[in-house]
Length: 278
Image (cartoon, rainbow, N blue to C red; front, side, top):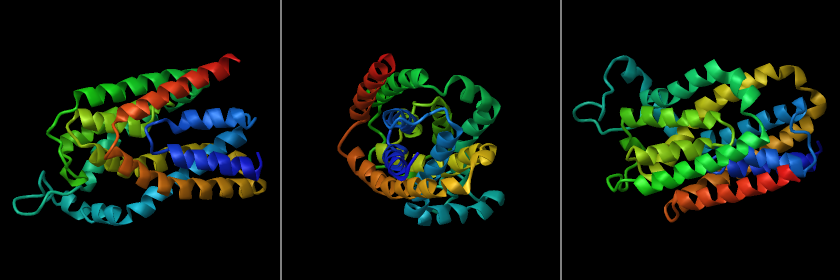
């Protein structure tokens, strides 16, 4: 890997991590086109590092919201945070919403981590997940209700948060897309497009920090100061591009449905199939 390849990979990661198009699929295809060995430990570790760069973009963009959520921790432990935050206080997103959404994926991820890495990380399985994930997004748009309206992320209930967490388990299948599964799940549960997307971004931070942290710990032996240059280049590229991509995606969701992204996934799956068959 060289600096140019690292920057390209970082840009692709930043563009696709929070869009419902599968960052994993794009990274595998990009690595193939750049002539990189996707199975090498160096490339695998690099992909973990640039993913952290994309996550950091969410922290920077939503730092006020994260502080607000952290401020609810004392009230949660005192039992003062209920649905609607009590009698007179306005409803707002709190740490319990985040915990409920994280729980399913954390449990399933820890139990099946090695199985997922062994059987689901591969170009062929990514092609299948791109198609299945696209079908879920089309189904969600078809079944969406009219009650969501202009609801904000603070209007999400505990039940909806846990339900979105269940849908997030689908993202453990590489290529399915975390945002694709959770936004689709949110829509099916009566959450608006933008509220589901913002909730997905917020929940992704602790989930991805945990998952990538575990992967990075297991890959520590493959880290070297000789790799610092292109690791840093990819990290910075992913961070900057992800900030732009998140803002752009939220704007697009107000005008476009998930069906557009589903069609893109089908096209990507066809490209994958052609590349793999050649």
